[in-house]
Image (cartoon, rainbow, N blue to C red; front, side, top):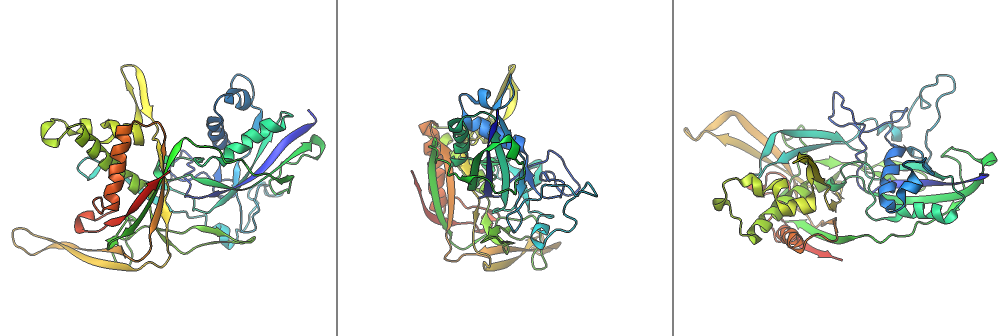
Length: 427
C-alpha cells in the first residue's frame, strides 16, 4: 500500500453534547470526557461506533470484527477561537501543551450541568431518582480524522457520506436531546505514505460535501408560544429567588473567531420528552379502554410498562425468563435555545398552616419565571418510521394537547405556569 485515504472533519454541536467519561467526581454524577489539556473531547472509538451502526450491512468488513478494521478514526479535539486544535504534548514538560489557556478555552473548564429527575405516574419525583450530568456547550466545534487503508475512493466516500445523516448523534443521551451534530467541513486527500501527516492542523486536500442521506424518520416541527409564564427549573437559586429558570450559553464561531454567548433561555428536550411520554400513555390507555378506576396496579399501564411508551420512548434493559429485553427510544427531540435577555417575573410563595391559617415558620420562598413575549419556540422532533399506527396516534394527540394549552410544560404547572399554544406539522 503506497497511499492512504484521509479526511479531516470539523463538526459543530447543534445541541449540547453528553460525552461521558464513565466516571464520577465530587461535583457531578457524570462529568464529560477531557483530553490532556483538560478540554472536552470525543473519543475516536465513540465516533467509530456511531459510524459502524450507521453503515449497516457490510460494517464488519469495513470496521472489523474477526479481522482488523480498515478505518482508523482519531479522537475529536476541541477547536479554539482560531479553529485550531491543541494536540501535542509540551516537549520539555511532557505534559500539557497549554501552559496558559486563552480566555475562550477557559470557558470550557466549567461546563453547564443538567439536572434530571425521574417522574412517576403521579407526577412526582421517584425516590432517589435525581442526578446531574455535565454537558458541552451547543455550538462547540471539534475536529477529527478518518483514515481508510484500502485504495478504494468509492468505499472511502461511502464512509464520509454517513456524516450527512440527519439523525447523526455523538455521545450519550440522544433521546434526551443531546448529541446532534452538523458537519462544518470535510477535506479529503489520497496521500503518499512519505508525505503523510497525522496532525489535525495540517491543511489537506480539497473540500468534500457528504451526500445528504435519506432517513427513515418522520420529522415533526412543533412551534409554540408561552401564554403567560413558564419555568424549566435549574435546580439552583440566585440573589433574587430560591428557584430560578435554567439558562445556558452557546458557542458562536465567526470568521476565525469564537466567543461564548450570554446565557440564553431554552427549553430542554428532556422536559418535552417527559411530558409527551406521560400524555402518550394516557391517550393509548384511553384508546384501549384502560381506566384508572378499573385496574388494580397502575404501574402495569404507565411509564415503561405502557406499550406505546415502550415502542416510542424505549425501555431499559432487563432479564426476563432468561432473555435480555430492552429497546432504545425511536424519537429524537432537540433542545431549543432563544433570546439572551428574556423578561422575568419573581413570585413570592408561603405555605399556610391549615389549622391556624397562618404562615408556617420558614416556609416563605420565591420562584423566578420567564415572562411571555412574542418569541416562538421551534422544536424539532424525529420519530422513526414503522412505529405502530395506534402508538403514533396517541403520540400526536399529546402534541395536540401542548399546542392547545392542555399539556403545560416545565415546573410549577399546578400554579398556572407553562401553558403554551401553537401548532405542529410533519413531513
